[in-house]
Length: 345
Image (cartoon, rainbow, N blue to C red; front, side, top):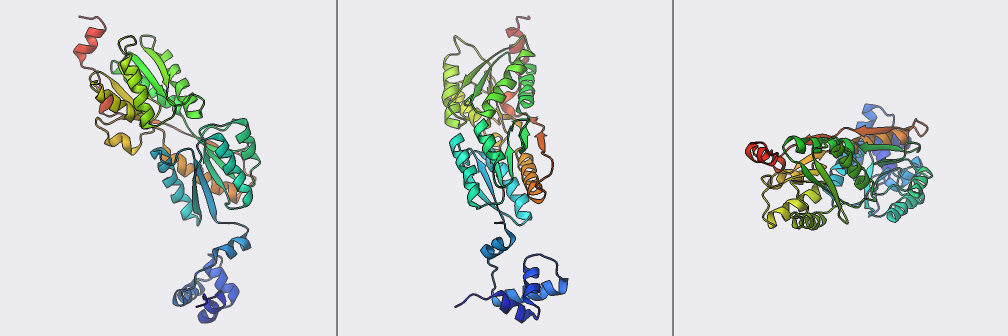
């Protein structure tokens, strides 16, 4: 059975084909015409041809969201916020997982095929080659992360160094003096910035000691293995707090501490970063730095839509402020224990 056509819709509604097209495509039309055309379309079972509409408008009405690890809950939170904004503007969202710099470059190269009208990219590694490719991209691009200050790319970034200062200050204030930072790969943007933030924060506390340990990735399994290593070495290198680079590493550390018989927070405080839903459901609950994932996703989507609407607008870089959510995993040491360790009696 042949599909109903817009000509049939227009005839049933008693309007011109042009009027029917405007009514169905949210263009200028009277309320009466829109009502008649939509009623006729529903009666006939007419479905607009999105491909034809895309060719006519010169747009696909699709946007791409590309992230390093689609399984990481922080990316899912950002994606939900992006989806909410773009759907309200009539766009579909295409999701892809990158991981490596080469895959990110492949995603950018795919833009030349004309499958989407814009891209939001959250890369783990920001290289000169990637930035150059993004600047030459045939469609607007927004980076969720750190783009170079001199680049011509809109970006939305978290202030993870400031967030790291918050969590270190909190741990020191609760009596912790020997802190270990469990990082992911240091050659990634979050790995570099969060480690720099940790070391800078420790420098403000000369009465405390901080050291770092890098895991191969930002997963629960890597967090478990890294925490097991530092806890096994605790006789030679004592510690009383683990600062994890993200919640997944922090959750792995919680599991390792439990398996090795460490009490959290009695013997050891553990903190994370990103404040995902997983941080709320662990036992004990994981103290975590909230980097505003949903807000960053919303802002990135709004920047992309604004760039599509006005290609020559000034470059925008937005930084989202962090906050600290304190849970049971970093409760203060008992007063008697902290006093004994300081040698005060």
